[in-house]
Image (cartoon, rainbow, N blue to C red):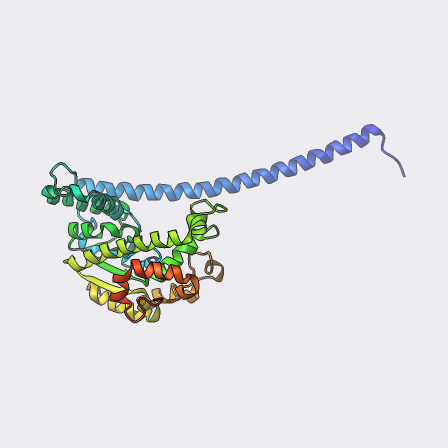
Length: 348
């Protein structure tokens, strides 16, 4: 067998190396082309969103007809981990509906308003009572213009579902500023709410991962009883504010409990829409309920540590210690006595 001389052997190895470099270069180029394609799609989506936003802003600026009207707004108030996401997604499925996911406008005004309670009567305080009509009109305009700019395609006769559990502290102000709007108050057993929040905020919880703090211990890990009391007090604040808004609201409204929504989802949704004075196609509503049923959530998206955790009323009995149950029941006693009288103060 003829052997290659050193120069020929070196040339062959150089050729192999060049071919390998070419292969790697082509692979890298293909990967870059793929990334460029993804970025191009993202850019096109952003451009469409920007065009919609500009169209909405133009409509608002010109005073053109077609902007979102207060009577076309459906507020969902309550508190976090109470099923507001599930309810809003079912409502969003209806063809005439769109969903504004947590604008936090209630938090913006409500938290500030409550914290400065002693100044409410003064004429120097920006949200002082002597000028309430003035600043309520500003809140009204801010919400309507913000909604129209973001959702210009909500047609005449359509509805914008505003999921605002973390803005429920400002529900009374929003209700007063937009009395023609529709309002939904969703209540869930505070013990289940706190149990869900406690797991979500731990080192392995979905909320910790969402915040980019995975691997770091939190108050829920180090001082769980402290976390439980804080969350129970937040629950009471949110529900008390939302209930205040519900009682005073002049427009169509509905109060539902998470437990009845789980037990008879379609029936509860029908009652909800009847109370709100909105006609819906029953087949379309049934399809929305079926699509977002717990059983149809992919298995890998639900379970311990996931956003979709249990959806099982009464799970707090397994999740909370007796001491934690006592804390929640003590703090939220008014809500338990009104909505869960057969099971209130269960640990006493």
